[in-house]
Amino acid sequence: MKDVLKWGLLAVAAYLLLRPTIAGQNDQQRAQPGATPGQQPNSPQFTTQPVITEEMIRKAAADPALAATVPGLLFTADEWNWYGEQLTGRPGPDPLSFLTVPRDTKLTAVQYWQMRKDKGLAGLRLWR
Image (tube, rainbow, N blue to C red; front, side, top):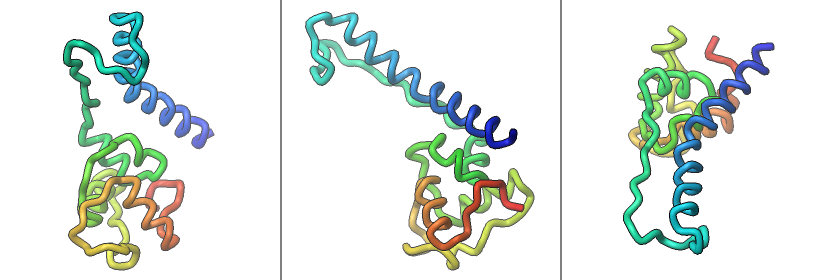
């Protein structure tokens, strides 16, 4: 039941993050009926970036299934560990045990979890 709830919430979060992008494409096509999808509009379009809260960062740092909910956000492995610890109350693994890049390299949450997974240090549960 936990897995169903987790994947359902992940799907809702992905939908909410992608909805402005999808809506912007539809509005552009309605505004210019003859425009093809790859064509630039006559007036500049401003896309809104999804608001990433600190709670979202903590969840992405603590659960690999939620790593994609904070796209483009860059932190070091130590910083990702700190955010994960804020949610779980348990420290993450020593970055030297799983990093394949220098310790001060900035990583996305997906890259962070991929390196942990490659070394066998990432599960599908919160750190326990």
